[in-house]
Amino acid sequence: MKRILITNDDGFESVGLHALIEAVRDLGEVLVVVPANEKSACGHSLTLTKPLRFVEIDDNFYKLEDGTPTDCVYLALSALYPEGVKPDLVLSGINRGANLGEDITYSGTVAGAMEGALYGIPAVAISQVCNSNCERTEMEIGYDQAKFVARDITQKIFNEGWPLGKRKCLNINVPPTKEFKGYKVTKAGYRVYFNQAHLHRNPRGMEYWWIGLHPLEWVPSEAKDCDFEAIKEGFVSLTPIQADLTAYKELQKLKGWV
Image (cartoon, rainbow, N blue to C red; front, top):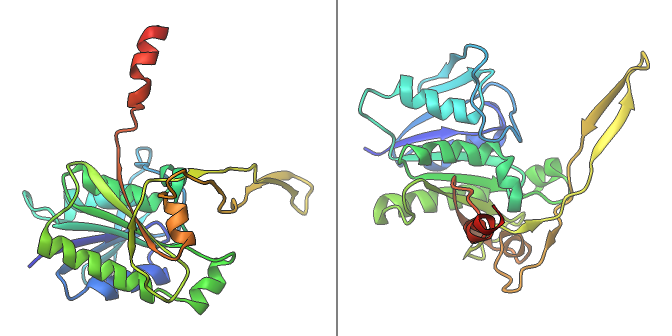
């Protein structure tokens, strides 16, 4: 039987997580290890300054107190699988909101998948893109299309093999529609960022800052082949990504500069 390790960055109670479990539970032996609390935008971070503790929620379902998605995968491989045994697939998600363009560097969802990839395990991050309001999208659209995609891609991996090379993972974004138009293989888009830091005062007059959400804006690509454009057209975006962030085209330029 195939082994599937599931994690996320939205916490153990998230609707998307339970949709993902439901989508693949009969395709293999499922182990769920997720953060106890929401860890959105935590990136590929490991917890090194405090101890971590598994809390069993149900059979093969654990939350990790104070843990990140990276911690969840790292410790699941170390503590919950027998020595020499690895899962056949790591699934991270279904995230509530997009992970498009450079946002993948912030994403705890993508980081959970990337941690699996670093250990040579096929790994997939799945995100449900929202309309302007994630709560409304969750109520009106739900996760049916994302569940179909998660199941379909899992079956393709098990039946046809992993399509990517070593230490690479697949970043999937599902458009905020009910209709499945198909897949588009994409590159990560060029995200446009704005300063969304908001200054407030508490009832005692003390200042604090709250970082807000950026609107999904991007620079169009000439070939119209980026993840943002696929989502805009209503297609499911499949983007192969890797941990190697080297800017290879700049190597010679940097050598000359030095």
